Length: 294
Image 1 (cartoon, rainbow, N blue to C red):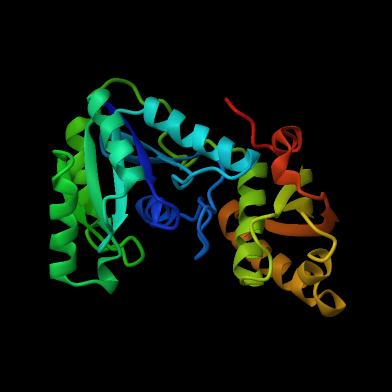
Image 2: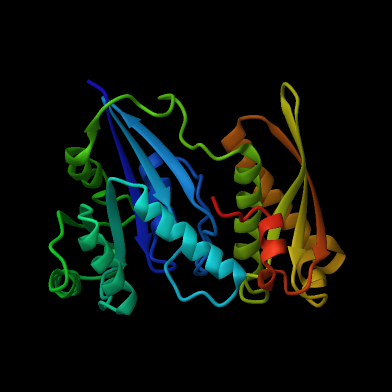
């Protein structure tokens, strides 16, 4: 008997949603960075285990939007919650119940949506802190399950699958059992490059970078990719390129290594840096860079 379950990973920026998705799948498909708001679009991860196919939607961190890109991210998160059978609400051990969480829980109540509270980052907290966090959130919602985990170390992650499997619906699988994402290869490639940008540049460059795949050519044992990195200011371009091109070479090397692991073939990666001033403020440019409302 085949079953399926659609679950959204929802929470504040930098709470560990993408790390959890990657750990659940055993593959790196969602961008991970210490910086908040790294996930800009909805990444679908697919795990078929025995008779159940789990479909996870990794959403942008919930926050008050400051620009057109931020508004797009919030619509993606809201849309994901409306399309699923269950929500995994991620919080950190020690978190308080803020206005954002209260609003989310109010929406879940109104939709009668099963909700599992995931207390993440237990590897850097203690039992008392975890218990206090559970008690605070329990005042505002009756959760179907509460699971303390460390997404980074994989601790208790399998318990999540056991708990949410109870909510799976009998029915056909929506995807082949041998794929882990429905994202186009171009999207995966651009996200890998953007992750390396964020991790390599530290705090020198804000989130004003976008990656557009201009060319993606596949041969038997080689994929040739030309990607353009857009930044918001002329002063950012030389920082991304680095002295004698060293920073761009490092970013390219890291990205190529991850792409070769994911695609299973050699990668030729050609990176270019361009300036598009204040692009996050323009709805047209945001959409042109691939962040389009569904």
